[in-house]
Length: 128
Image (cartoon, rainbow, N blue to C red):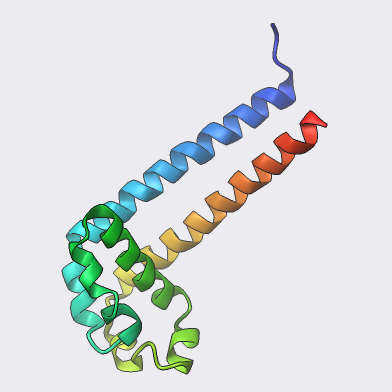
């Protein structure tokens, strides 16, 4: 059995996407367990984050849920400032390097998910 070039390309892209998702989850867990105190201390006046703060004691899933809320606030601050879910002073005082990491991690996750959906669509159309 020989594979065509398109099958090989599909496989390589799938493997890169899958490994990228695992790396992204690993980085997220690392940030959730090592930098959560710093993030919560800087976002004490943000109701969108503090209402989810008790999930921190919920193990890896709770930490990821809380980190997702923080990444959402960092990625789309205007949305949270408009409805009162974030405090402008807290966002201004948040460490710039950590904010950059969170935003990059958020967009990387969305990109990997988009690639996965694209690969699923290609696989579905290929079978027809």
